[in-house]
Image 1 (tube, rainbow, N blue to C red):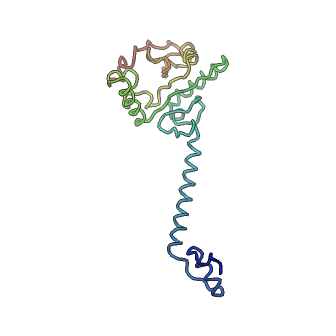
Image 2 (cartoon, one colour; image 1 turned 135 degrees about the vertical axis):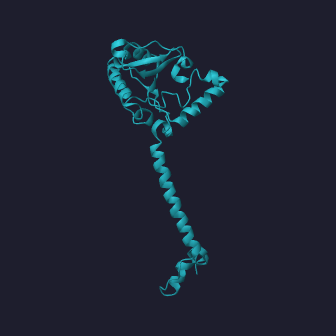
Image 3 (tube, rainbow, N blue to C red; image 1 turned 135 degrees about the horizontal axis):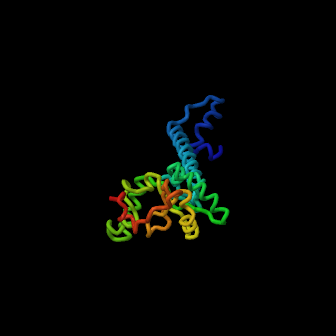
Length: 208
């Protein structure tokens, strides 16, 4: 007789052979193993689906407001899709003109969740040493125009410089002297031009 007949995991199969086809019930331990294997297979499939959706931007899932590299106004990420529709439309028009000049308006930050904004502020406090100094660069979740979807940060100096020069006719204006990349929509700008900038966010009355 083969040694295989003495192995616990094959025993019930061979009992069937030796009894003329009469089968025995599958051991409870084997059933449990099969159930665990099924659960593991399902969980693996779910993990694979999550991984597929996380491919954007090198494997990160950009749900809170972070963005992958080379994000534009047409990118399908929450940081862009959750922007104020009027702001996004203005960015689209400006982006079309900028592309004719060989410039791409990459968005390095747009809409942010309140939790994401709080995280950025905590990191800024750690970097700058105090909440007061951090507030010159990062607003609170309650005051940030990013959280309300009303602000974008434009990547690369040539892109932000182009938008600073041409953005007014689309209503897109720089707001802070220390953040040349930060733009918001000002509906009067196409006629009246962009308003004067603030030295930094601490001078902005909206931040109070």
